[in-house]
Image 1 (cartoon, helix red, strand yellow):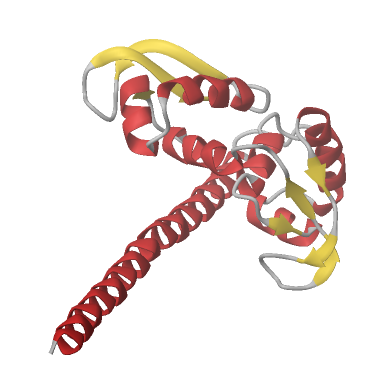
Image 2 (tube, one colour):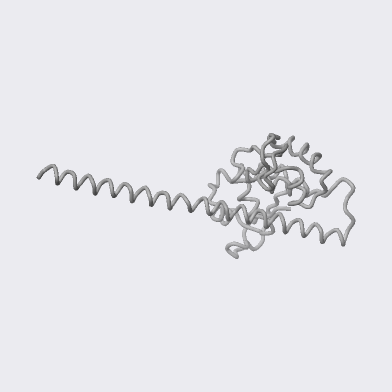
Length: 201
């Protein structure tokens, strides 16, 4: 009788652990889905930036040495840790194919850039690709996406990216090596309050 009772409690305990493990699996899918959404948003941002660059060419001639924001566009598409070939970087940033290698030389002076022969994340072709190896590269991507074409105070930027304030200062310093990050007193587009807001230029 005691053994039967013990067996029943064991079954309940096992059933509870199985249920708990299934709950953990379901919860684990949420960050993955969130990361996929951020990746799609980053691609949309890069595509919009490329369209803006194309439109700007009708207003002013393209500089001979390339635009000042070209390196920022390249870093933006690589910031999520993607390994991309030259063709795909050119297609996603609308930067001429011939300029990509020169931009990657500039990027290598500021970041650790790897060039393995592995499948490209975008087209799947195995060839020489570029991959940004930077501690916290996903955090860098989050900040770039949050500040792209928006003015946010530090509090709203921390809330939107869920990155600690102390870590945020380090990320902004890293980001400042690629694009210009300015601070000015203006309406925050997150909380609609006049504060010191951050903007990418």
